Amino acid sequence: MHEENAIIKDVYSNDILEKIFLELASATRCAILLKLSNSPMRLSSIARELNISIQDTHRNMMRLVRAGIVVKNPDSKFTLTEYGRLIVNELSYFMFLSNLKSLMGRYTFSHLPRRFMNRLNELTNSKIVNGVSSVLEKLKMLESNAKEYLNIIVAQAWYDEGNIILDLVEKGVDVRIILTGRTLFPKEIFESDIVKRIHYHDKKGNIKSRFIDHTAIALYVSDTQAGIIPLTHDMNFDMNVLLISNDESFHSFCSDIFNYYWHRSSILDTNKINVVD
Image (cartoon, rainbow, N blue to C red):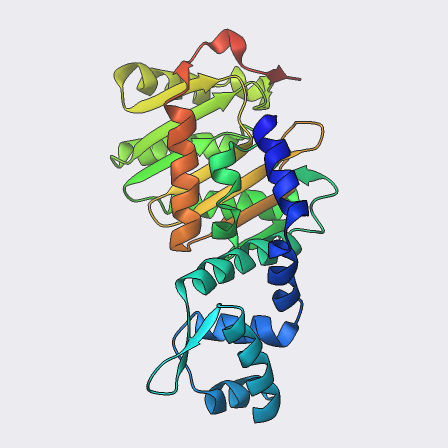
């Protein structure tokens, strides 16, 4: 609490944040920074690509130079300073939040461990899938296409997923499953032959299953693709929304979270499974 108060006091006692956000309050300057994040560029090239005048480009560039965000190289190309590169990296964080704004009325990422909250910008290059049937179809493809491994934190058990897991095991794919206190397990599936067969393979070590009381998201991670189902505000999972991507950063984020929860999970106790009618 003392550390938090010190940060707040520091914000009020200087104008650092005000200066940073003043420079970022221009769509033109943000566009210039995003262009420079790819490679150094000359004024004429930036003006042409952004379809703005040389004069307007120069005026905005000079502001970024004075702020220490951009520097001019001896070859007349402009490039981001290290300070500027770190600032631009945060732009993707805000872009991600903006893209998810429509979902935030029902879903939340705020219960993620802080180390992952600070990495949400890694989810920028993802597609949002809406609707139960579409979500299940995408998850079916993600899981079926696994060649080396499949790691899942289950939001809700469903028949096709059980059959896919059994098929993957027969092909020698490494499967790790985490069930949580929020995982929905329909009674007819829990009592089905599919679960008995999965339990058999679990006993043999062909499938590795664990349990943890709570996770902040559900995850589906194969060797080529990853997907996320977020928590609702009432701390439940539903199958109406899926974030999915084969982007490297997105995949790394999902893999790291799965391992985080895997190392904190315990031996699966079927008595703790949330079986619903």
